[in-house]
Length: 283
Image 1 (cartoon, one colour):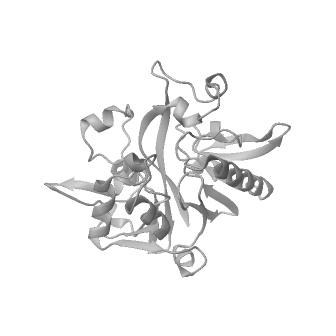
Image 2: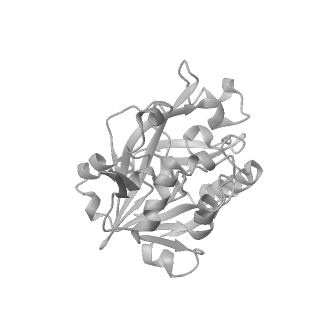
C-alpha cells in the first residue's frame, strides 16, 4: 500500500461559521482570519494505492460551478485534482474507486465535470461509494440547513452514470473489498464516513469534517455547520480518546498547513502534538 496526499485547491470560509460558539479571540490563535473574517481552508483528499486498486477519498470542490458561485469562497492556490494526481504519476482514468465521506459540495464536487451541455463523471473507470442513508438524506428531503450544500448538479450525474454504489453498513464485504475500515458518525451530517487506514504499522484516520483543522482538535471547538452539535461533541470525544490511546494519526482535510498530526494528552484535554506530511512522517 502507498498513500498520497492530493491537494485539490484552497478556499476560504467564514471563521465564525467554522467555529460556531467559540469566541474569535480563541479560534484566531490557530486559524487567523482575513479582513472579511474568512479563514483559509484546504480541500485535501487522500489517494490509496493498494494492489490493483487506486482509491480516492473525496474529490474537492471541482471547477464546474459558475464564477459567481466560486466568488463566495475566495479560491486561492494553483493546485487542482487533476494536476495533483498527475504530480503523483496518475490520471483520472487510473482511479478505480471514489469514496465520499459525505456529499457536501466541497467533498464531492470534483467527481464530475462539464462536457458541452452535460455533466459527466470525471473518473470514467471508477465506482463511486456512498452510504445509502447519507445518499437518501442528501437527495430525498434535505433539511434547510444543508440544502445549499447538496447540489443536484453534483449528485444526479453520479446516479445517472450507473457507477454509483450505495452501502448499507460497514460490517460486511464492502470494507474488506476496499481494504480499510470506516467509522460512521452522525453529528456533522447523517452517516458521514471516516476511513481508518493501516499504513506502515500505524493507523491513520481521515477526519473529514469531524476535525477539519488542527484548530478544531479541542472537543468543544465545533463548526456551526454541524446539524447535531452535541452528537458531534460526543463522537469527537470518544474518537479522539481512542486515537490517543492507539497512537492513531489524523489526516486533516481542511487545514492548509497541517496534513498529518499526532495527538497528546494535556491538562486541558487532547491537543495537537506534532504535524507533518505523509511523505515526511514515513520517510
